[in-house]
Amino acid sequence: MPLKSLGNKLDMIEILENMSEACYFLNSDYEFVFINKAAEPYLKELFFERTKEELIGTNVWDVNPKYIDTEIDTAYHKAYEEQKPQVFEMISEYSKWWFEVKLFPNINGIFVTFSDITDRKEREKQKQHYEKLNLIGEMAAGVAHEVRNPMTTVKGFLQLMAENEELEKHKPIFDLMIDEVNRVTDILTEFLDIAKDKPEKLEECNLNELIKSVLPLLETRALKEGKLLDLHLSNIADLLIDKNEIRQLLLNLINNSLDAMNAGKKVQIMTYEENNKMVLSIMDEGKGIPSDIIDDIAIPFVTTKDKGTGLGIPICFSIAKRNNAKIDYTSSPEGTTFNIRFSK
Image (cartoon, rainbow, N blue to C red; front, side, top):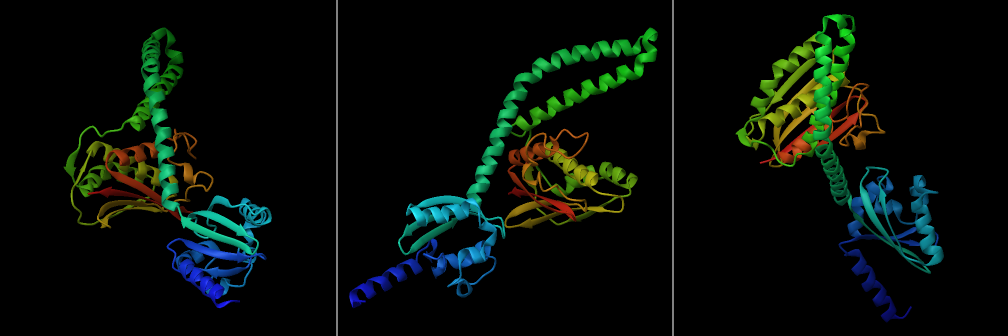
């Protein structure tokens, strides 16, 4: 090879090595021949904790057999066989991080660049979620008035009939029907709670005091069911929040935790400061959120409860948003943890 060509090649390798964008090159046999510095932090996410040295010379499909016969496999082969660039998004099998992958083929193989888009995907997911909530809110606001008026009339006549001595034998049926009318009204109210975009009243208050204020009610239920509530409250600063809404959030989440547990289990309620945020953490020892709905629990009507409306968790997400907070959660067969992170 002429010295000039060799020099040009070495210059190009140095440029690629120092690129801020992660990249690697596969030869025509789909073997790694080059991986740059920016790619190294992501190797364990994409290639199951292989080091750069372990990957060089290995076939990409031997390293990632789970991707064989998938859209990812198809994209790589299409890029090389048709000599056409390909772009796609993928989620890591190892850690569930999202990446955008770009394939640039030539006769010698495929030059691959990739970037972490996990934050972007999360923002898109949140945007879609709030768009759904807004749509539901608009629907709720539109029908609530029209439905409540006839429901009030129906409830009034049912109450009159329930008090009629001649219809006394039917009173249990009337009472059941009144309960169902009340249930419809409650659902409409919850709908409207999701649709709100502003808190009703912001004031300085301490999370620890709010937790203590709802504790007696929750402890009564827990004691009756043979379950425990365990508090770990740190010394934290006051927040500007809507007290009534945060009380509702506490009741919803802690009652959900109690619902998920058997007797003898406990719910831990913690407050602490982390990364300049005040964190409220609720950890239960229940059976966990089913994997088929874990990503959708903030969507209205998604529930595993026979008698649940599926509105409690979506309301909590809306409350958090209105009170300058975000909710994240983890779940396993050993339990579920919800973290509500309030910005100061």
